[in-house]
Image 1 (cartoon, protein in one colour):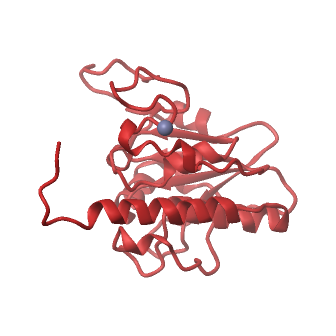
Image 2: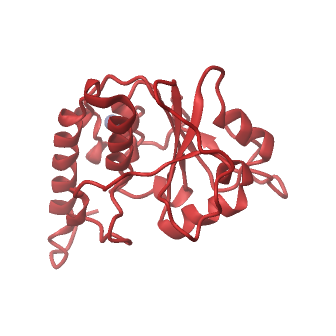
Length: 224
Ligand SMILES: [Zn+2]
């Protein structure tokens, strides 16, 4: 679903939902929207959770073979992924808020980010968790360009768990983990021991190993 038609002269926002089956590219898996050769549907691990998850995914991340969000979306029943980097205020407000839910932004507590307006107390409350899937620099820009995002009460990870991601992606910050791992850790903080993501994290470890194995033989010519 596009906000405006592609090609419209000046697009106020550019986001597209990827949850619904779309007119996917040929030879792509309709469910995970990746090329059939690297379909990761078999790695999905249905994981029970109460918190709603909204991932705002930068368009550049959507095209990364090593991006972790597709696996997250396939494994969490209440996970919506919207691709875009500019959101019109009304469209963004409609995405961020749900009746009866307290919206929190998963974002580190860093001096570069503007201070949120609210502190929020998610203890016991039903939460809608907003996650930015972008490089550190781009996620900060998304925050600075969208006051409604910057104003959200934040959730920051206490001490990010060691990442399984290092094999395929150099961390841009010492504490940076994949979006999947950060989201899973946030859900653990919000939901406690009732949330069991061990099978999903194990499957993610296999995904990371697979991608690393495909990347390794760089010197060998690769068939098309
Ligand atoms: Zn698939």
